[in-house]
Length: 112
Image 1: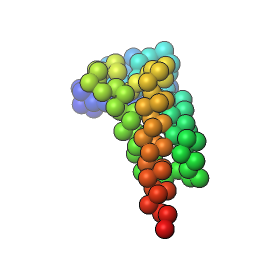
Image 2: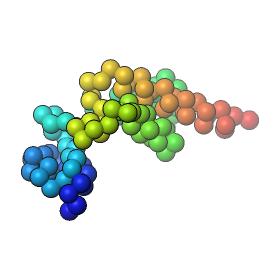
Image 3: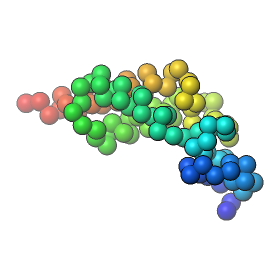
């Protein structure tokens, strides 16, 4: 493994052990930075779906959510902050708006 590798070890391993072999480590564990669990994207994703009244999830909505999640980190990118905290109050509204927007835009494009 390259010394500057990025490891998304989502099976809750020992991040310290993975960190000996990688430059950046992300895990599902809440006691380490870069925690990735379903609580990270779901509230903003579902808020956007509910706000738009979307009857289903489409790939363009998922992409909008992923881009918005990355934008919350923005310029504050660092090895200990490659994903936002689940406690970042900007996360849900930052994700909900683009998800709702893409859902509404797709809905408008299908109207005769």
